[in-house]
Image 1 (cartoon, helix red, strand yellow):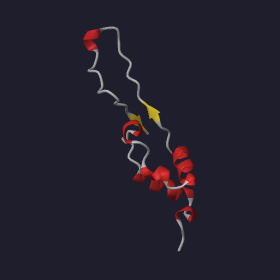
Image 2: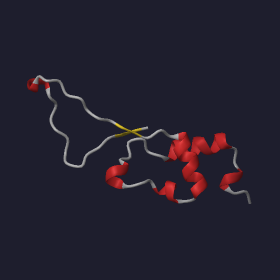
Image 3: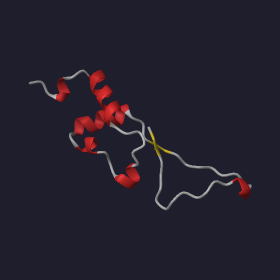
Image 4: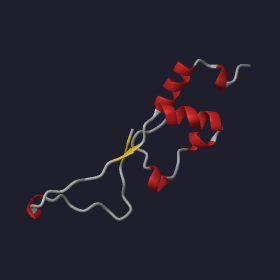
Length: 78
């Protein structure tokens, strides 16, 4: 029986794309379980996904400021 690592990288990347939720908040919910399976899988996922944090920028006009986010809330865009 073949193992996951014997699949071509392109196929593994497709699987990562289907299994990882791009809206998953790593700051609130921690790392996805798939990142904890094997060091090689973690390296592949980190090279496949670029993890960024959205930082809101407000204007000096207080009337146009959006409501403040909830305490500890951060967004993840992948």
